[in-house]
Image (tube, rainbow, N blue to C red):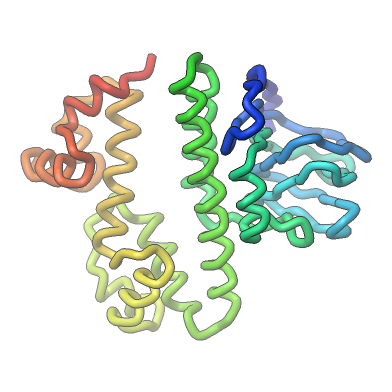
Length: 278
């Protein structure tokens, strides 16, 4: 595992009524335990790879196997890190505010159950990457943007946890596996009926499970995933719109542009101008 270490910190605002504020972001290769620490704010940690333990004074001891995500809450003694002689790769963020407290009250953040497995590490990785970019910027807009991204990250983690619980319940296991395959193959030309049959479920069961879990049918989910990838390519590469359309599974770049406009409210070229990153 390649060593890496960086962190970005922000000075907290003075407003005591702020809804949410991200105060720090980091990514590290960890080779030792953090022992008996207490934070005065909330933290979210994404363990991308590796294994080890998490111990908190409220929830006890947990075995951590990446990819996994856990939350740390203010005022609670905790220790965590990789198993002796090993390392893990992590990304983390510190945050606070009244909205963070509301998330805890609604049990999206649980003191007694801080650890969750991550089924879609690509999605979580992209959210953390977006948060990283926003933390590097300055001004009020970047503060609002990073707060919004963290909001989305917490909600998506809760949705993944719920979907994982549905997997373990048994009857929806095949449909859950089919959806996971759909997400992994979203850029391919998929026959959803054949995909459902591959996991021994009906197309109707696949549609129902996808709608219950993500709020949209499989085709719409696939389109969203394709457009998410398109937005990433538009923002960080010099590829033409035509090349990006082909890369995400659209043979007709004009049709891709129409779909993009419908879902994003602007053309691919306009999105690139607004979101170009160096």
